[in-house]
Length: 182
Image 1 (cartoon, rainbow, N blue to C red):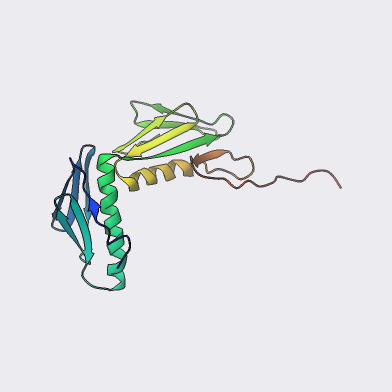
Image 2 (cartoon, rainbow, N blue to C red; image 1 turned 120 degrees about the horizontal axis):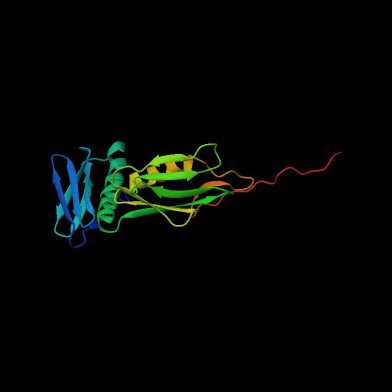
């Protein structure tokens, strides 16, 4: 039995979970999320509790058991609390600012032209000063994907640490040239 999959999911007050035609729908105060469920697993919805079980002990069934339990749990957390990731910008002249009603993120990252990142639907981005970006939303996968796309515009380099990094990320620094003529 999967250690993650066998754990029941508690549904807080104000959250509604429905299962129709292989699609789980979670509705809460922050919005609505849906997820397709594979036929290898079964989702049982009781008042205040959701459990995920599998039909057999096949390898694929075992894998999907824990996966779908965690996906449904993340959906419930998303519609109640939401998810957020913080990105930090380091470098001389590197900065970020929001433009056009919060729809475009303008980034100056040391390239010859500024970069305009269009914010996807369902995601909110806030800039706290020129060096801090907060990406938030109700879908954990989309928040992580948008954060990864912004980070990939200028990954941190190991010599001076310039670039965009996650708040809790540690950059392994390298020693530069050991100088002098011989």
